[in-house]
Amino acid sequence: MFGGIEAGGTKFVCGIGTGPEDLETDQFPTSSPDITVNNAIRFFRERRIPVEAIGIGSFGPVDLHPRSPTYGHVTSTPKVGWPNFNLAGAIRNAFGVPVGFDTDVNAAMLGEARWGAARGLQDAVYLTIGTGIGGGALVHGELIHGLIHPEMGHLQIPHDPARDPFPGSCPYHGDCLEGLASGPALQARWGVPAGTLPEEHPAWELEAHYLALGLVNLTVTLSPQRILLGGGVMQQPHLFEMIRAEFGRLLNNYLRHPEVIDHLDRFIQPPGLGPRAGVLGSLVLAERALSGSPTQLAGEPA
Ligand code: ADP
Ligand code: ZN
Image (cartoon, rainbow, N blue to C red; front, side, top):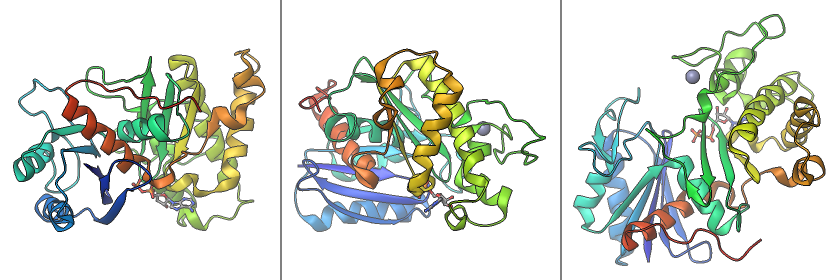
């Protein structure tokens, strides 16, 4: 049995199990670190099932370097109380088991590679479009960490102020991808919550344009076999087809591979595990922490 925590900036999802078949979950809002971590600890204690290891997929930025003195900390977030909080340490101290730690989107990527829509793939991207935009990538079957960790939401993309005068909502960059296309950006530009914009509203054409620009950049940089789009904004089912069409238009026949030319419907698709991708991926982080080495990611080929 493994424990998993999807530590989001809005809510925490805790899970216990071995995979999608037996996963038991609960969730609660993210408040102060003390209250939130105590809720997570209570979740596992109440189950009375000993877990061998716990994985955490966390909002960030986070420190992922095992030899760093601040490994497992949330670093520079604007969320009150959370900067420099030792999240992995708090969980390790409570349970005394190995704790795996990575970004929430890397965890979701891992879950999708093991059980979801990226099963059997070696190279894939998971992008969430919600309160923020964030991405995790699998390259040669392993997650990318790099110097810190990827911050795909802050891609700089073309922004024509004549077409879209909205300056963007990213506090650091204004009109980066997150500043132009996150849920709060949609709300700030159009004055209503993203979920209430009707299907025929011009918001969606612009949204598809920005997201497709981001996906083109990720595709020409990482050469993924598939891109999965999750998060609240992607709960608009018509958006997938609009993004695929715009992605194809922007690529302009440049990448001549059947997956891109003939199968955009599977090249760009929703996560197979839906909202459970992050917490299930956290179970894989737990398993990897226990074994001390990266485990086989891919299940049977999809
Ligand atoms: P978080 O990113 O905080 O983990 P979500 O992925 O649920 O949470 O994203 C929340 C954002 O998604 C909000 O900005 C909200 O306006 C937007 N959102 C939620 N539901 C929808 C929907 N059905 N259509 C479009 N946007 C939505
Ligand atoms: Zn930004």
